[in-house]
Image: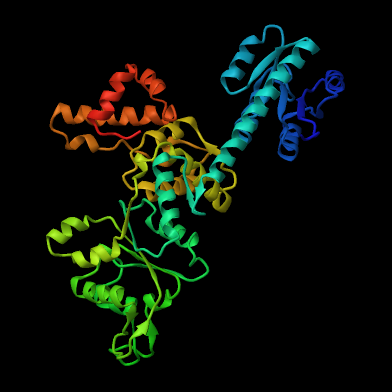
Length: 453
């Protein structure tokens, strides 16, 4: 347990009262200021836990304009700061305005030292609780950083990460299936990091981002003079991954002729460069990913079934962000901390309206969309707290496609149930109360909509 004293800042222009108050707080490390400028300097330098603030500061000692300026500037700098304002006779309206503006509490003048001590002690207690909660949240986030990369608290994503941890110890081929932006490459890299190949290369290639006429060379390499522009012998991605892991992203975009050559490599575990005649043995763990429906492509004869079975020895389905209970807010806070440190250190957090919007947004672009929204908000925010306007989360038009009431009602039910379960951390009884329905009714809806808890 730390013996460090809590810090108290007393902002009071009456030097006699200032001295009396400072003397009475022997259990605190006390700092004093006589005006707004001094108070802000001390606030930045000492980061006090609690502040007592006389609203009647110079150059307006008989009014409250300077005190309100100080209150506004302090809260802008430290939004959760516990500020207790002084209220003289006939000034209670000002004190109530200050509380409405963000002050934690107020005390009456002339000062009753014992009463003020009680108010300050309560404020300090709440401040400590908030700090403990924040520390615990940070600890929880650290504990749920799975595979060395995946930040999550959702049962859905923890299940995925645990599955990957188990298969990582083997050499089976893994197919990651999920929508764009769900973190397929991050999971593939995480799989490599916890495998026995972690000290060898992790080579990733996006098969959908490379022109068809160049993809074969990228994968298998080429000999000098194999084609116009081949001025030197070049190893392909498969060779470069020797001993380690090869990640084929968007494997569904590989053209049929090249699928044949990829299948041969998987069967023989050797490659032949373009223009070469020599088979080069390669020891590679293959992980692939796609957002496309490969079963449908097999039916349509655009993807080989024998290649599919070679690549999909283990299939892992990755949930969309909207299906990851509680993760949108958790990830948003992680991204804000990261981008604020890099680009805008004045940003301290999200306003309540922003957190609510993040929690209720469907995130069609998944984690990638969330990351981009938070990054832009950190850059563009005028305040030190990100608002819903900074995030630019416009009303979605998902309802526009519905032409009947039943489908629209089902969508609304699903969203409400998902939010209620997330906010009650999976407690069905509490979620039912939040929704205003009975627990059996909620179970019936979960069964009707085939929703997993």
